[in-house]
Amino acid sequence: MHSEQKAVVIEKINHELQIKYQEQMIDIIFEGTVTDERTGRSKVVPFTAKEIDAFYAIIGIMNDEGTDFIQVPNSFIRKYTNDRSNVSIAEYDEQLAQSQQKIASVTFRRNDDEAFISIPFFKLFVVDKVKQETMAQANDAARTLILNVLKNYTSFEMSELASLRRVYSKILYIKLKAAKELGEYEVDRDSFVKFMNASNMSASDIKKTIINRSIEELGDGPKGKKIFKNLDVELIQDPNDRRRWHKIKFTFDKQLKEAERINDSTQLQLDFDI
Image (cartoon, rainbow, N blue to C red; front, side, top):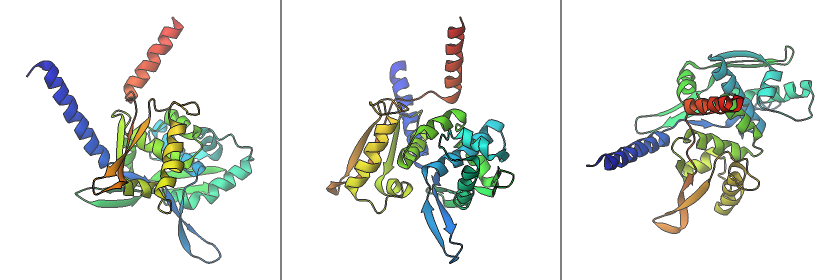
């Protein structure tokens, strides 16, 4: 076998391994349990766009500081999420405090051939409205998640995530970022509907409201943020029912690894200085 052929075979094997790993990626479920103070009843509520930003801001701060415990001013979280709303500091603190229950109940799940695991992300999450600060500590099991799955969520990714307006775009951004070195992300319909909290939506609404609008915002079209170049989607038909799609495949240009991105940015800076 010629060296060129070997390179193609190796590339194919690596590609398949990456897909296998991606399919077993841990899912972070963006829904939280909220208790009604009057009735005492609890219900599960999907995250808002700002709550997703706040969660990833906390992860980003942990990554930037190399720790699984933080105690920071709420204004720091607000700055990290690039929040430009006109609400006052007190109002922002109140919004964050109201979201405390939901953010504190975030779980991460892994479902593969070996086991199904569902674990709360935080063992401590407190929003102090008097001191105007937030304390958060990840569960011991979540440390591995931060180090391996979420290690690239620092201030750079946070600024991209915070720039997106739609909740669906943010969730898809997170999925595509996990596959940035692969350049494609494939998911079965049921899983997609579940993590998008779209069980009450029709197939046409899912395509129009979630898929098309997310691609419009994430891609490099006229209205896009140009985060994923040449972003496209394929709805894979169910072989047993040609009228129904059962998988979704997103493709886009591969992105640089973290070290390559830093080196590339440094080189650009050096070239500029020269």
